[in-house]
Length: 471
Figure 1 (cartoon, rainbow, N blue to C red):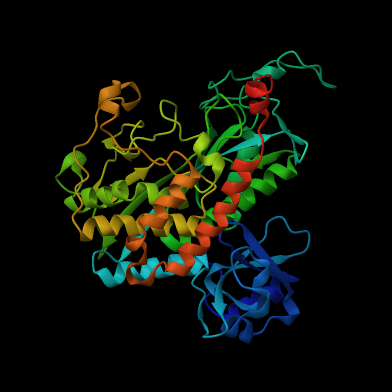
Figure 2: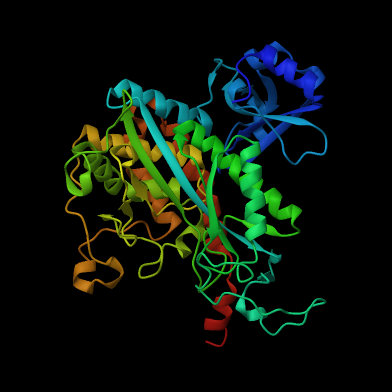
């Protein structure tokens, strides 16, 4: 936290010769939008009353005849942009509806705030901590085209084994991980070490405490971990993380993507979400039940399992998400929980102290809007606690190798984005408790995402030509 008062902001602008202030907010799909103001135009009123923008240009928000909206910068969220050529301050903003001067119900950041407020009102806990692990790919070139008569893509990473015989201007040195062979490799097999190191250092510059980084399983795949925090703060941090990953990769003349499944036949990228509840500085998930969990924690797990298909609409919000969530492969699709078992959708990590006790939801992916995803998971968990939803017995076995008759007894996550949206439409009441989500908000989200589904379903795919052209 750089600032606590507007006076501190003014002093910093003068001292560091800040030229611009970027005001950023997140749209429904999770994309960050921004408006840039000259620092000389910033006043105390900006942080009290906000600044106007056109809400009709944001998909799924306002109509053109009622488009004026307000962005209200959060004074505590300020950081210096590490990439701008000219000194620039960045603030995350809430979106305000000028009709009633209240938080706009479709604003994802405001939804996260309402979820934290509802947690307090329940009396169950006073803090919810979230710690996501976002995986991503780094490529050297990406080309794609989607027109009426052409649908194609090609990607290239110098790390992939299909480049083992390619000729380069520089010698081909031959160090490459094989398919599914990159996990925790060292240089020169790991060609992205320095890029990840730069990301890690840059995270520190914007207030994120980087914990570790390593090469992931697939060629060109990476992961960095940063310190957990409260729901809202962590959602803000995810947006910072993505911004830094994209821009550091760009500065290395490479391109990064958080698509869950950009490569056929290799591992996809997940966003494993660690979460826990606390009250009066006491960890509520530690106890004497299975794996030293509390009954409260088991009920929280029960809520997530019960509402998982509806949650998928937020935690796995793209058509590409379901190319990763395929039974029998690396992503956990079976709705079970287990201690240290990475084949279960809910894993209980091994920890040394009660203060570290938490759960890890393994099915989400990094295309999720973090404000919606974290808020929705909290609401599902709270519903589990409030209604004492039993998650059933834990699963200790490797769920990938279960016989078919046993597999059929275990529920799974959604099989497609359409199924997830249908599930959200039918199972939404738990999200509406305390006014955290609203029917209008959920309906508009479903409508927006269904447009993506329809475009995907109506576009011929190259594999269909291979399978059916000569039929």
